[in-house]
Length: 144
Image 1 (cartoon, helix red, strand yellow):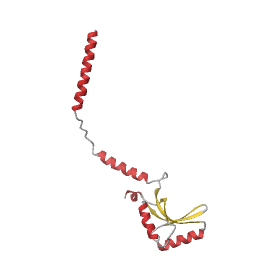
Image 2 (spheres, helix red, strand yellow):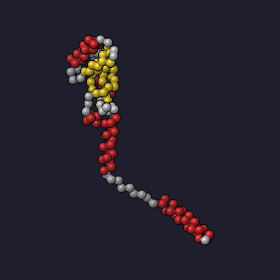
Image 3 (tube, helix red, strand yellow):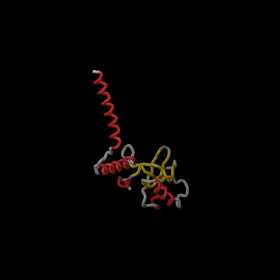
Image 4 (cartoon, helix red, strand yellow):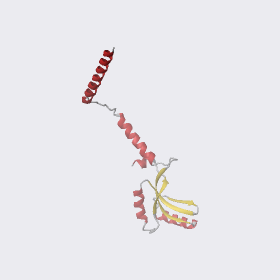
């Protein structure tokens, strides 16, 4: 009986050593389904879009802040001046107590906002800042 157990253990150990040695020389071929590449691209696009959205689904972007003042009249005068000089951009006036802020544009990338800020420096030589804001944009703009 003891002899059978010893033989069994010896046989088991020999089989294990053989299996380890034989497995090292083998190769594994993985055949990938081409649909995985399509799925990966779609997930990448979803991640890109999601990173550009706020928690309530609005688009994160940049605007150019022209002024921040206590005077409502001054804020609306600046807004009128900007609309007359730059009719291609939207102008936003917001009130965050105690200040009225005038901001221009809906830019997805900071670089775009910086280029436009340089154009505006001829009219407003000081006080122009690119600030993060929630902008009006569609998801196709983010993909570019």
